Length: 86
Image (cartoon, rainbow, N blue to C red):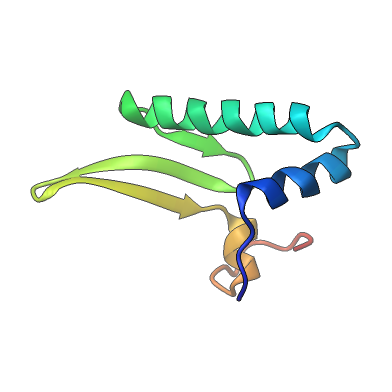
């Protein structure tokens, strides 16, 4: 399995939405910063059709969690309820 970095992600999104990479990079940066700030404030972040990011307080400390949405679960065979396109 290979990984893509932020630069490649921005490039792919820019091609998909036919926008300059500089604009897409600003939106990606702002999105990630908003997720970070929300989590820092103890708020969960739900991205419909993707998943939920949240912080869970445990006796051993704070734990970062991600609960994938049904479409992402279906991609890996973790879901029996999602019937849309992968």
